Length: 561
Image (cartoon, rainbow, N blue to C red):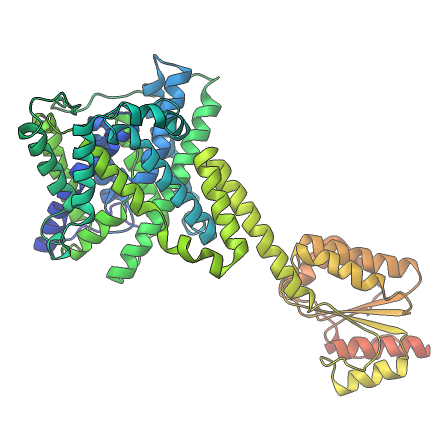
């Protein structure tokens, strides 16, 4: 595997144009997310430069654009608020340390090759927590939208402060925010490919604030110091380690899901396969570098990536170009951002929150499945009112339990106990004849499909109601996988029958299933010749026992080596 991402020079015009276009879109978003997070506009720019540069160099998706995103900003906002509340002096430095740790976790995910598992999450959970994050981002912008600094206490604090915010609204700033939001919402579609609406809103909103509201005190970004950012060394104590590790893990998982979902989108557009594990490593490198230099975390950005590809980009050169252009802004053009009103940035961020909400699934979730809708709404509520980790953990747990229950009900139909040939459609003519002669003394227990733990109860229940047999035949012919819980239920069945003096025969157990039975000691508990290759052979041997004519096996082909 190559260390660097795919950087080519055979599509120079397309990659350079893609990088320039992505940089133009990234600038207002980076400023908005930096301010929204509480770390400041400079932190947003540093994050856009460093996450974008390192992810482009070391990632696994050539056309992916990585930068601060709405979901990552929401989590970072909560991290900064909680750490500053716990430690006012070192809180911000600790927050940047969390970003570094998140990068290390992502690199570890890549090294452990967990990329293919990161996005194996039910859509109801992904939709729920993304919508919840969108709702939080919208709520957090209400304070700046109305002309005030964000109230303390995050989303819940903002909701509690709404009466006071509306009572003391600053009309000029709210007008600027509404103008910004309206411009982005209603920007002509035919012009979107030429001019990014966010940049137009940023420039126009700033000019109006200077010339139409020049005599009014409006909150602005202020000058961003030019030059390279200062190094932020990791700051934490042993007592703070657990809190910081949990926050970092939350950022790492969210950033990984966000990036890999965007990688899938890029792959579907370009038809070029990405490397998920390499992408996680590149994302981790980017967030580690961003945290080291005081930047906020980032991930793959869907809008930037799609625009980059549509502009003609086909290699990681576009991502490098975008990062270098933004670096020029950071180093030499910081003074140009000083007059940007915070209300304009609030309008831009609020539109991002609206875009994150999964409106499509919200409208039809109840028609698709009431259970799915309940899970999604539950995850939204937990995300907004509790925290993201709890929301995802509960959502995944409930969704998986419901899935296992549904699979267990389906697979329990493949667990069939047969004593009489009538109605046993899966028995051959010869097998039915043997059962007919046995007159209910032979019980055939047919198992089919993977035996997951949800089937243990069905196995025990079926055996319990059929307790009059003399011989038990367990048929594993159609079983590819035998789970621990199901195998223990089968072990109990075999041992119970052996204890009662009944004969037990096993048919068709091969490969992993045979190894599991061997490790449990089930095969060792049976007499020689009681493991056979087919159900027919097992039934013939069982009939010999009934007739009292059991002899040493004379057909080696019916036994396993």
